[in-house]
Length: 213
Image (cartoon, rainbow, N blue to C red; front, side, top):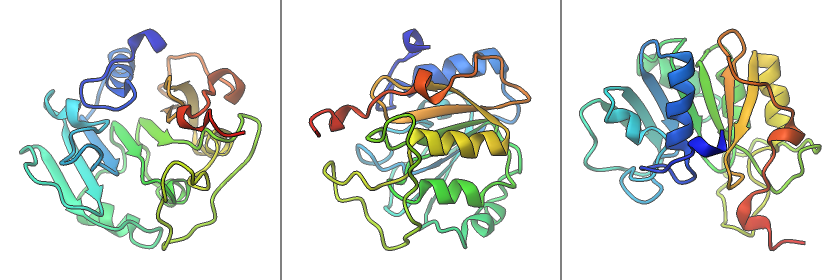
């Protein structure tokens, strides 16, 4: 799928991969939910911004405020936890099944995804910790006070293997990792039309950890 990567608003070619996936599996309600949307300022570098221009509805959540939200985007300043995530979804009237979930909060991503296990997005994009090789299990301990400290901090999130085990248990297949080793793409097994990849086949080392020994 590498040839389909393209960036319009996304950081690592995700716009093109998302477009390709939904051309193959189709859409249902064209609802996208994204956590962590302030990269680049005012949501200018997100995985779902391009979808808003294609008449999708997006629910955005972040701990920082964003101005100039498009009409079909519902944005909330919210610190998401495993205790409030379900309540937040219900308050926002997010249906149990929707087309796309993207999680990039530089920390408790794995635990938030686990807390959402009763929801069934058709496609999930998870930021994995590409510092860890594809055969290593790693999950950051849940910590609501954690804040990512920058590129020397490799304690965030979870490894690709841990996310893939979680996804398999929840009924999802690993189909791709972007060229920079940032995001992994999972498709719900009952609708997946793409080859299922092992972690070794999909893994890309996180590009900014190449300098680490």
